[in-house]
Image (tube, rainbow, N blue to C red):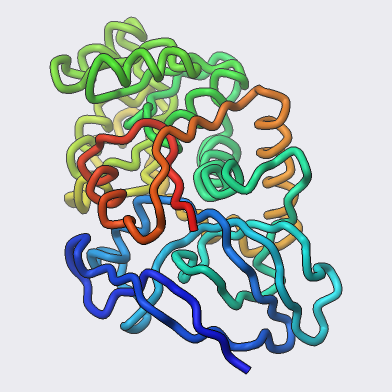
Length: 326
């Protein structure tokens, strides 16, 4: 038997106004599935890319959203790892902007008592992204020099804190003085206000001309090419997003003389295996629980007001993490 719930759905791609708060039907969970009642959804740039059509969805209409926390209401046949009443979170599963959702049990992460629904929805996608960037795309070691583009964003702040905790010197770009102070308080030793300073020149000055071992860039078009100039010998550019637009073709000769490299990351490849995903999430949430990593939730919106949230995130008015209350 199905039930009717509210969700944010798009019937076409475009601006924030294409998102509609409407009724949708949710069925009973089938074999291997669970029914989740969402309490909090995360807000991420990938949601904007789905809504705008930059990252095409399989079909329309579609419920968007890629991260949410909540409680299991029912389980299908064969589900033994979870039971009704369990608190869970999931990410990288389209359909999170909804009151309830059917999802495969193998896509879930169990929440410990020390992790609230708000923190889980704010930090799972961004935190697991920071995890693979720091441990897989480039294994940050003590003494490394790291450049984080958009250092005051959700992923950026986690990268700054985590890289600093691992012993790296962190340089970060931000849009204004308020964000510079914020990044400085969260592990970024050298915030650069890119709106008035040339970050290539500043990175060169800070590193005595050596450059950085790794650049983490989710901005894309506006920063990628200049970021390549900041890489040291045998360093790496890690691209994991295109918030400002697609990246232009790269002349690899720019990197060859320094034996530098480019890596393109996507979280989906690092959360397919439930064991790996669970272990990485346990490490993430333990570091948050003991205060090593601070998740700053500075913007809260009702899910029905998600258009305002998308506008503010796209215009870079937000600092830290944002959540959608369901």
